Amino acid sequence: MSANLQIKAITAEDIRARKGQDPIVSLTAYTTPMAGLMDDTCDFVLVGDSVGMVLHGLPSTLGVTMEMMILHGQAVARGLKRALMVIDMPFGSYEEGPAQAFGNAARLMRETGAGAVKLEGGVEMAETIRFLVKRGIPVMAHIGLTPQSINTLGGYKVQGRNEQAEAVIADAHAVTDAGAFAVVLEKVPQVLADQITAEIAIPTIGIGASAGCDGQVLVLDDMLGMFAAFKPKFVKRYADLAPMAEAAIKEYATEVRSRSFPAAEHVFADAAPGAKKD
Ligand code: KIV
Image (cartoon, rainbow, N blue to C red; front, side, top):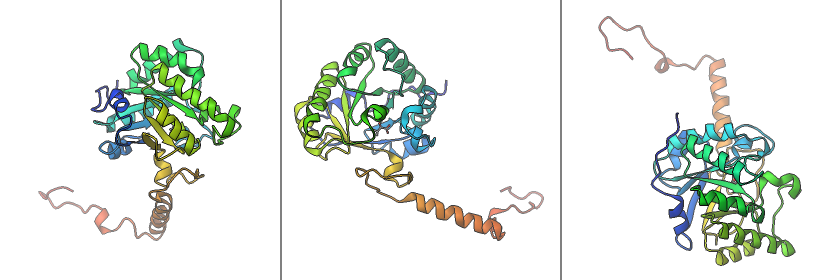
């Protein structure tokens, strides 16, 4: 087995204990090198099912499979020593009920070394969350906009506006009472995120929510400007890497076509007998 099964320095219980403390920092990662770059800085690293859209070109997260999550989870685990690794349960791997969810959550943890799983849903997932937590699986919940439900939500809309707010508040309390160690609040009004953060006993992790949440998460490729297909309002681009990569690819092509690459410093001379090899 290639998974890195060592327990990372930061655990789900450490994240839970950060409620109301200094903000929790998190990003998604899907590969070993990127996980390595964020290990010292992030408190937890999420192997998000956004991998399907970001790296595999899928139109939504619905086509992501257990095998994809395991492969990327194993890669991310190899890059982490310190940060907690949380892995998404893909669409269809947990909704049938607690027993299905336990089997797949245990497989994700066993085969990747993740320290916790994340699943989408509030009141309707409370029984499943309770079942997993009671059997040793730390669960991060995800409420508000839940991308695996875009077909019933009618798209990637803000959730919890006006009279919808009570339902999101009920979800937040349900996942807290069920034993989740933290909850992602995605794309909800700021005032609602602040109210939930004040009311519940576990950390809220905002994405398109509020700076008042107990922590924040962003999709890595969004904040690096690598995923150029679209930019949600809640994404801040801390870098603009896609145009840099495109320019580098074009420069390389120009140099190949003009035979200026490879240059003298990139090729190997015949070694003189006894000389040290390159
Ligand atoms: O899959 C993912 O990247 C996520 C984040 C948007 C929270 O669930």
